[in-house]
Image 1 (tube, rainbow, N blue to C red):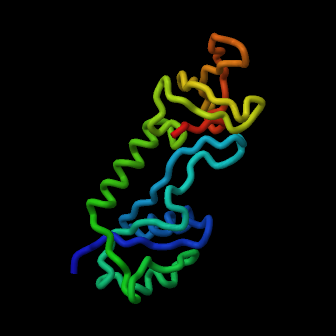
Image 2 (cartoon, rainbow, N blue to C red):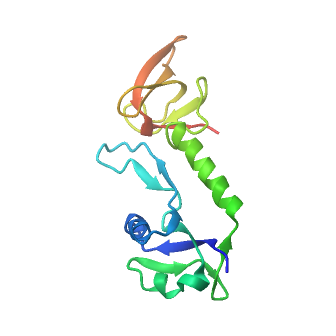
Length: 169
């Protein structure tokens, strides 16, 4: 039988452990993660795109379901009527491409964010203000936005942590 992509479920916040187990067993897998820009500098900088889910490319008839049923920190496959549901390869490839684009753009905050886009500041002393995205700054995930203060016709540049802004729809 041929190999297919399947979605394996992990216990909450155990994706990294399951991913390492799959790697150690030499199984082809895909663990989609994206860069994030937390306000707390000690928080994780990379998080799962689908918390609790990883993709594995295997021949289940050859390897057997028990390999995954007894793997620590797993909850089995995404299944329908008790049968693991295969995922078409083009969907996994499209997902890999999209995750790569998000990460190359600088992470989730910067995905689709271009100079001149309106953003809302949601944390810090300027929380609640709208601003205009200007640029990413070198260093620890910082950005510059242009803020128009009350009764002022000019825009003032303000440097913020990337996690403090959200793009307005």
